[in-house]
Image 1 (tube, rainbow, N blue to C red):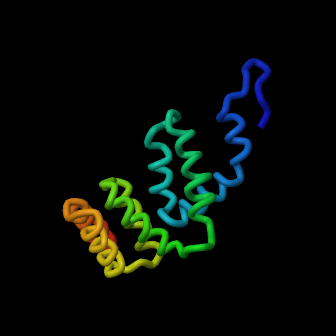
Image 2: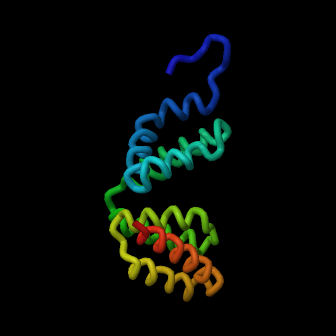
Length: 143
């Protein structure tokens, strides 16, 4: 990265330099998991203001953690479903439900995870998660 002589480099200039390869790797995996259109839509959702956040997501979430070999992508997806349901994050839950199906998780596996959520995180969290799962599963079955 070449810096302009007219300005002092910012934290993000250096962060982007140090994590460029990681972000590219993460963006590739993210698109494989969720599809090009879905990722592009999410990356543009907050415009220029959200670019640093998207860089962090691509580099650290997908370029680093999701790329680690210790767990399969399916197991990671099931863990994300549990965490997003427990945290009551329905928009992120829907994203990870769709990703789990793409990663080979079955509706039965998703249901079992949501039953664990009910037991350990509460019925209200599980109810919301079931609503999201039914919506996503219904969308996957449409031609």
